[in-house]
Each structure stands twice: as C-alpha cells, then as structure tokens.
Length: 259
Image 1 (cartoon, rainbow, N blue to C red):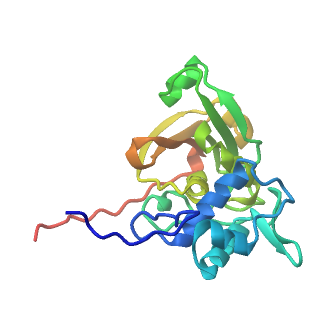
Image 2 (cartoon, helix red, strand yellow):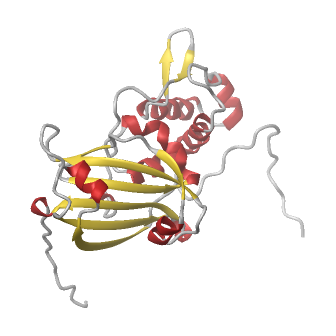
C-alpha cells in the first residue's frame, strides 16, 4: 500500500542535519568551504541575508547565527551598506577551547605560535615511511614553537603534517594559537575521534635543535600524535619535541570497581 507523503517545496532543498546538529552549523560549513575554496574572493560580498534564507530554507535567526560564527572565525566582516565581506587572513586571533579528553592533549597554559610558513610538500621515501604514507602523496607541513611565556625561550618545537584534503586551514593559521586539529574540526566540520600517542627520548634532530636554541647533542622528548576522524582517516600527524628539562609527566590512576 502506498503511504501518504507530505508535499515538498520546490527550489533549494532544506539542509539535512545529522543527529541533532544545529542548522546554523550546516550553513557555516557550506559557506566556509566556499570561502576557503575561493568561490568568494577577499573583499567580495557573501549573498544577502535574504539570498541565504532562500538558498538554505532556514530562519533568519539561523542565518544570522551562521554569519556571527563566520565573523568569530575571522573569515568575514560586516560593513554598513556593503553587507558581509570576505576578509583576508590577518586580523585578531581566535582561540579554540576544547573540553573533551582529546582536546585536553593541548596545554592551554602554553602558547603555540606557528612562526614558520606552512608549505605544501610531496612525500619522498624517507618522509613517507615516517608518516606511514605513500611516496608522492601531497601533504601540508606546519612548523611552530610553543612557549610558557612569549618572552621566554621556547619549550617545544612542532612539526605538523596535514593531508592535502585539509590544506584550507592555511588561511587561518595566522589567527590561531591553539591546536591544529581544532582548526580542522572548525573549518571542515570533522570530529577527531581517535588519537594514537607515542613517546620516546632521542637526540635532537638538527633542525629542531636550531629552532629550540639547544646543542645538537642534547636530548629531547619526542611525542608523536596521530589524529583520526570518523572511519579512521588521518587528519593530522604531529611531532612535538620538548626540551628534556622542560617536560614532566604526572598521572593519577583509579581502579574502577565492578558494580
């Protein structure tokens, strides 16, 4: 027997949402992707509020909330008489605060600065082996330093490798001081679900010793973290090199008793 179906409106379909995801976040993800892919150039206006209402079939409140979120990310700005304009990558930094257990991997008492330009790279054999990836794959390399105090010596140097599919984060690096994985989640709407972490002591690689300002024969602690999204795909691989004198691990363990 055929079931009665409610009539549907013509034109743009109302955006579907997975689970209970707010509608404004779907609007944000669509517009962010288009901005980062260059559909809207710097200085160009986004569609009007009315145009976004027609496109996404959502309420005015939802559109305004999405635009507010894009402003908070530093991607757009509102100007009287001009509407919402795409802005360049410079401007006030926006800090990402994670509260889940994966987010706690980033020390919020420590500032991360990505002082070196992010650069696209093609993996050669040694680097492919290091990342457990295929020779010839395209990745993004982000290098940076971490400080307890901006006026002090860095305590950690980082090499962060991001698959090419997430390379759009480059535009926002100058605005962020938090973790790269938080930026990937924010820009692409992906959720980091798993992290593998490995620690080892080693003699500082030459490029790391130079960035940390230490002797090439000094010991550092390398922490390798591999971040995966849903389905196991890798979103980031980071190598964190801490001065041995600036690193301490503390743990508190509790036995979980059966009910």
